[in-house]
Structures are given as C-alpha cells and as structure tokens.
Amino acid sequence: MQRKHHHAVTRTRSIIRKFRSKAQQFVGDWPDPVRNPNASEFEVDLWILSRFVLEKIAPVVGTHPYPLNELLLMTATACAPMVGAATRSVLT
Image 1 (cartoon, rainbow, N blue to C red):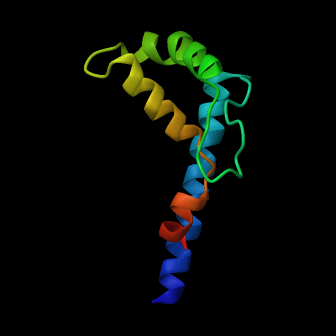
Image 2 (cartoon, rainbow, N blue to C red):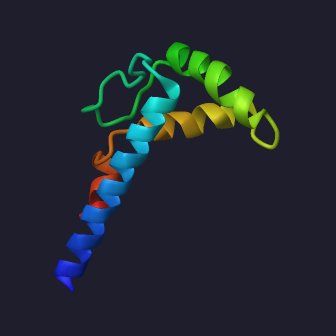
C-alpha cells in the first residue's frame, strides 16, 4: 500500500510539473508574483497578478461567472509552491 501511495504522489508531481511547464510556455516570461515562498502565510504581489489576469486570463475566460477577484484568487493559488506547508500533508 505504501508503494502505491508513493507511486501516486510521484505521478501527481510529474503531472503538475508538466502542466506548469506548458502553462509557462503559454504565458511567456512574467515576474514571479510570490513574495516569500517560505513564509507561513502565502503572499503574492497583486500588481503583477492583476496585470497577468487582465492581460492573459480575462481575455480567454471572460469575467462571467467568475468576477475578477475570483480570477485573482484562482491565479494566486496556481502560483503557490507545489509542496508548501498546506499541501505537504496531502502529498506525503
């Protein structure tokens, strides 16, 4: 059972890395909005994130049914470190 769990975690991390790589190719070079990835509270630069949402996300998905603040929250979540304090217990 432990081996299956380890395989699933490894596979999940691989999929996430591939997804992030493809996403990076789509959006191009953007400054990292994560301010302090080792902090106990996740923090992003809203100026960078706002510009990204307005230039890249909103033109593709629009603002209905998700308003801009929800798009910001979803985008910030995607910026979170892959294995941060909140997800470490889930992935290991």
